[in-house]
Length: 475
Image 1 (cartoon, rainbow, N blue to C red):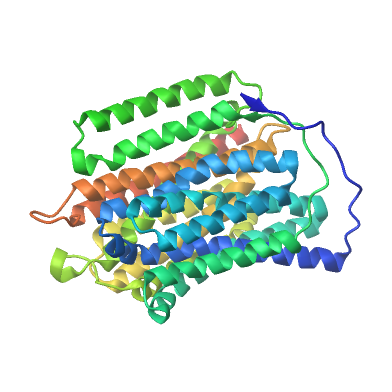
Image 2: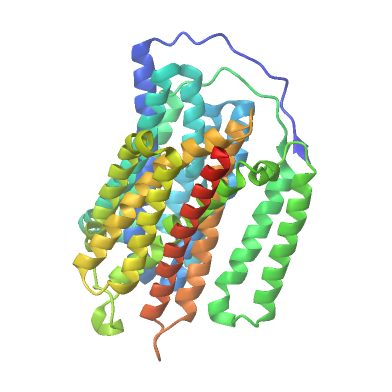
């Protein structure tokens, strides 16, 4: 099953004036700022969302993981549609779907509908690739690279801004539901920019959409995620859990077989398996486990009352945002410094340094989480590592891609990162739902230590893989 567009076409050459180019990039920068706000706004609100819908710390982790799994499916298909039918057109669609998803999240009468809304916000991860395509079509040379750097910087800055906004929005607007509507307002403004102020690209590519591949990936991920989500209620020996997990793995195996035999697959497994790429892509997946998988556990840990569970600080949304602010600032600093450090010690070593810092931060958190100062210090170390890795990985993927497959490799990088983060979030949700305090529905501190230890080991693994890739390059 595939969908084919008309043959490639090229519109007239762009004659956009420099001032107009600056305005266009500025509008897209606002769209990326909105994307960052979405990603930073929700984690501090997770405890409040859990209280609103009466779900456990393990269940609320699905709010993050399902959105990431949706992104893993959405990003490759939307970017391919952009190449075929116009990047602005698909950007508009992606923005419109996110507007609807944010509305559903805010007004959802049940937890299940809230999760559906989070799935509908998955396309926000496709905004940046579509905007980069528009930028490269309109701006060239050093100006183009600076413009793309501005978009990435706005994304990272938006995460920090969103984290800071969440608590005051909840306090000023009188609850978590009206606070979540703030995201809808930003999404509507970004959608307006895409409709009226962002230009369309001029070139169309003749490609096929692997409908079977995208459908197979979506079905496999949903089966695996549903099976994992039911373990806390039904247990690992349940026929429902085992059936879903086995069915998901079977569909995933059939999907891989199909992708390796399809001319234009949804996810090019040959690129992932290329000897120059697999260490980097695997390292990126390990990075995503620590980056995305820990978001929900960290928020629920900070919100838990020490008098009730023996750990945590009983923080509200604003308190969580303030305590994690050093982490966000350190991430921005690390991302801004990665290029200078790479010029001195090399890109591979720069990413490895970031991975070691991340591992050291999470390792220290396993031991020192009894005070707010200790948590903030370790989180700052993690943030610096995240910034170095976030800035360096896209360049490394592009440099190590096989000849003529840079765009494919970059798209796969985004996909596998979202996929790994979503799966990690689901597995961590299982840990928090099953490793509980005696006679209590609350996770034990051992559950959180297991999450942080996994993140630390993921960082060390990523460092080793990146250095291994460097040695192969040197040889």
